[in-house]
Amino acid sequence: MLTNRPRGTNDILPGQVEKWQLIEETMRCISAEYNYQEIRTPIFEHTELFIRGVGETTDIVEKEMYTFVDRGERSVTLRPEGTAPVVRSYLENRLNSGPQPVKLYYTGPMFRYDRPQSGRYRQFHQVGVEAFGSHHPALDAEVMSMAMEFYRRIGLVDVELHINSVGCPECRPQLKEKLCEYFRPRESDLCSNCRQRLVKNPLRIIDCKNPGCQEIAKDAPTPLDHLCSDCKEHFDSVCEYLKALGIPFVINPRLVRGLDYYTHTAFEIMAKGLGAQSSVGGGGRYNRLIEECGGPSIPGIGYALGVERIILALEQQGVETAPSPGPDVFVAILTPDLKADAFKILSKLRKKGISSDQDYLGRSLKAQMKYASKINAKYTIIVGNDELEREMVILREMDTGEQSEVPVEDAAAKIKERLASCTD
Ligand code: AMP
Figure 1 (cartoon, rainbow, N blue to C red):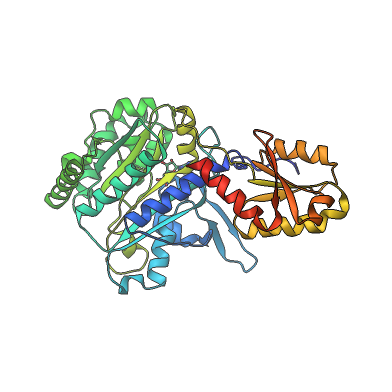
Figure 2: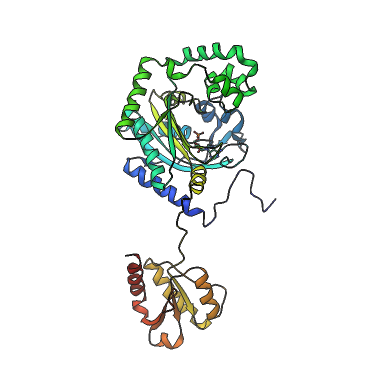
């Protein structure tokens, strides 16, 4: 028990963590290029925020939230997604009173009590963006192009952008009515989840993953057939912008997505080779959410990309990330009495930005050299009494075994010079 992590969680160890750093760094770079600024919100929020924000009838709220009563008798929930907290923060910090749109990005863990399997975890991570304050379809195209650029930059290929419009409060009631008319006579053949959805949220039946439901839903009415003129115009315009940007996409009339807050554009990105969990990201427009959370009527759009799924997809596709290199320098000592002098040399190297390390187990010189080679140090500085008296140290290149004496004062500069010539 003490040495087992909770089900559905993962340790990210050295060797793996480089992929995470690449993803986070890429997100930072792209966000700067697209002019999105970072926001960090708490890991837990008042439960009510998610009930209102994500939607009472969603799987997330009905069965997946990590909710608990704290010592002050308040119900709090580990965030299952990033949008509702960012909306809360936008309102609480009155970001709506500054220039619009406000474009934000985030990275971090999310929590859902899901059935763990490959690509589905209870603690997972997302990188995402939210943009508030504009109805313009160019913003829809911008966030999609940003997501696609992200996959391209980290080297993920074979990703497909699926888009749809899920309508708005104008056109959705008619669609819901049509869906109920279609599904009611077939109710007994639907899965138990979908029988409930028929009452609460019939739209979700059309993207149920149950093969029986999929067969029944094949000829069901879709949102695209019932869009009002505003929604249709918006959707056509989004498609035009995507075409202008040269971003390939597939119109998927059955794409609905699991969160209630979407209006107009909904999109999802699928990667090949991931089996059932092929969605590596998704998002959409949520023009009612801010109002739903108690704010003024302000439109929004965003996406969230699943970090674990992206890493799985990269591994499936054989994309390698460079492992962490070893330190540039290992400082070894000939005899234990030289430790303090060696430590001073090590500290100077570090201050000059050279990654370096030393022995902490009292090893012999031979064992220190063995260790330096195990941790892939590029150079070793050997500190000996005779050399030190002359204010010199020995510099050894680990790959070639070449050794020379260098003045202590010049060691950092010499190493920097050699490291620079290696990367030229
Ligand atoms: P969502 O917030 O449900 O729109 O999901 C956005 C993305 O997060 C999905 O496309 C997945 O890549 C990822 N994701 C969602 N749920 C999980 C989970 N339980 N485990 C791992 N990744 C997930």
